[in-house]
Image (cartoon, rainbow, N blue to C red; front, side, top):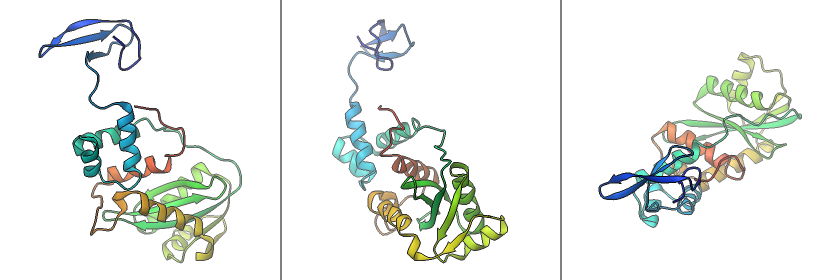
Length: 224
């Protein structure tokens, strides 16, 4: 019998539970049942892909034959395997900032033109949130050449309050990439649908969903 965790064959029988044989892995200490799991790793990966392509949790459960709570567990499990350390770039970069509104919070997003992806995000409103998104993007992009935003006054006020030294221009003509990224979020994440359809009430799940979505094309997390 192969261990579910480390794939070792150095296992032995370890009693029974409700008449079903249990096994013990001598290498990693994991105990497990003899029968295969109800849902394979492939099914779980499919659930994550569906979740990141505008399929709601209840529908995923309906399609795969599991409960919504099980789908939520898989999502949290996948998120727990993301790398904690952010990727830091020393190259000079141009950053675009914009916001998107949800039912429970406003999201501020920073887009890196060099990396061609979202570099940082934060949840919140007003000057403090604008200052926080600047600090986050500055941590991963120390050499910011220019910052472009729309005409939202909170950015201008925040940058003056926190003594931001980088050049800042408010113009819609230079925020097309971040606008496209926000549009992709609306299109692909059911939690960002309008209130009349599907929406999120949980800040924690909102953060988990965004971090999974922004890292969906990178090899940052392992398989189930």
